[in-house]
Length: 134
Ligand code: THU
View 1 (cartoon, rainbow, N blue to C red):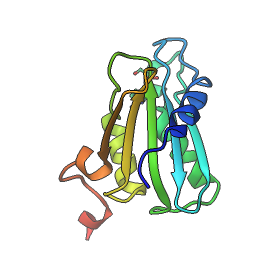
View 2: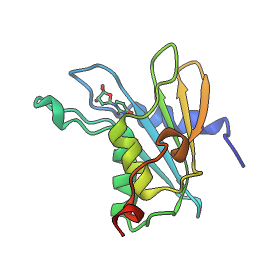
View 3: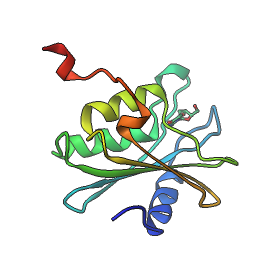
């Protein structure tokens, strides 16, 4: 189906809930499941800075907590307020590698509606996964 314009509305709504008093860099994530449900995530920071949780991981933790399983996800859309959409951090790439299909689309957006499209596999080439533990 590919990226739809309403994904931007959804992800910008998620971003509005970000708790980012330290960086002032608000991030939103809109995770869609293959069975048509949506999970929203936002970054949640802490005075102990390294404890911050990214928007992408927030949305995935929410979905798994509600009973969704690895491979159940259709796409993730991320948004930031910046000239150029930013891409997920290394920890979130590894998290997506664990829970999402390698060919799952990752849509990166900003307040202008600029769009960069990639996939979980392309964002983490030669990534480590459970298959490597055999
Ligand atoms: N952040 C995300 O939520 N997702 C990313 O992919 C990159 C960074 C958050 C973490 C922190 O709260 C703020 O952005 C600045 O790094």
